[in-house]
Amino acid sequence: MAAAEEKLTKFTEESLVTVPFDVYRYDPAKGGEPRYQRYELRLAPHTPVLTGLLRIRDEIDPTLTLRYSCRSAICGSCAMLVNSKSRLACRTPVGPEVQAHGRIVIDPMRNQPILRDLVVDQQPFWTRYEQMEPHLILDPSKPMPADTPTRMSPAQVERFRDTPRCIACGACYSACPAVEADPGFPGPMALAKLYRFVVDPRDSATQGRLKKIQTSGLWLCLRCHLCTEACPKDVRPSERIRDLKELAVQAQGGTELGSRHAIGFLNNIEERGTLNELKLVRQTAGVGGVLGALPQGLRIWRKKPEITKAPPPIEGIDQVKKIYQALEDKKEGQE
Ligand code: SF4
Ligand code: SF4
Ligand code: FES
Image 1 (cartoon, rainbow, N blue to C red):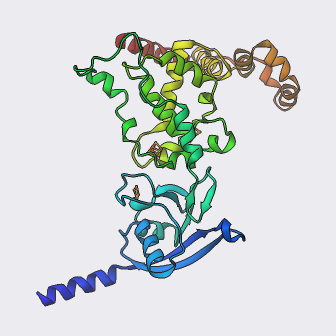
Image 2: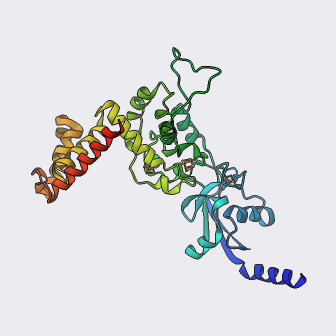
Image 3: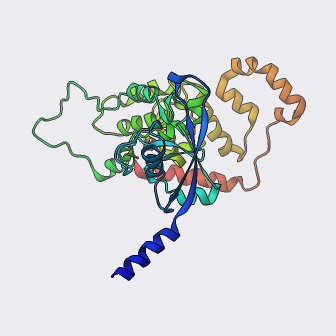
């Protein structure tokens, strides 16, 4: 028994790796510039980054400030940048990070003001969430029966199966370039939550929700999918945003720039398999928009004169049309 224990201990000792942590430090109360502080620990490769940071705080530097709670990827508190990617520190093992990067650089989440070290002010994230009215809005003339369960079919539940997995960690918000570029953009998590209520058959505000979101940020999404890549719970917010756009166009047509651009794009590809860029600008912005964009258009035309000519349909356009027809048939079959 003693020999087995000794072997186990030896094996454990040998399997430890040296983990250099470069941790972002900034305390506005003390002034000074933000800096990175180097700490080194010997850890088993499967050790979560959060455990490493807590050991630094408990054994080396009690001033290190970070946010965490469950340590089990449930509460969403420990999101931070690990080697520049938005991650949950409690479910990111140190071994693969050191193997890939030689060290672990820790930064606070992006797109939110830094309060101290790794703690950010999440108010902007929560404000956008609240603006989505993330709760059922019921028609007062049709109150829910108090003593009877409200039933939904499996197909209805399937439509929002992914979104309740969200733990509001903010990793997607931190990764999103549209949030960084435009303060009006609601962010991926807020839009995924909105989607959840838009497709809920009990909600009576679907049309109003879609109308409002069309002019308050929906079309600012860049479709880069960084939010989906960052999400630790596979909520896939970028796919839910795509679904919201589709629902908005189906319900309300091309009511503004974003939806008109999407419809024009779809029609262009169906017609020729490639874009007629001039036509797309006209379909999106109208004649007034084309006139307004004339100076920019002239600059492009000088470099690319063929832009004024409609491109011929691509070889194999018949195949493209068949795909459109198949999609149309599928949609009709679902209705
Ligand atoms: S897909 Fe849209 S919401 Fe997601 S990160 Fe990119 S811009 Fe943001
Ligand atoms: S959608 Fe994913 S990344 Fe965004 S807050 Fe929810 S769990 Fe976190
Ligand atoms: S500490 Fe709760 S999700 Fe990481």
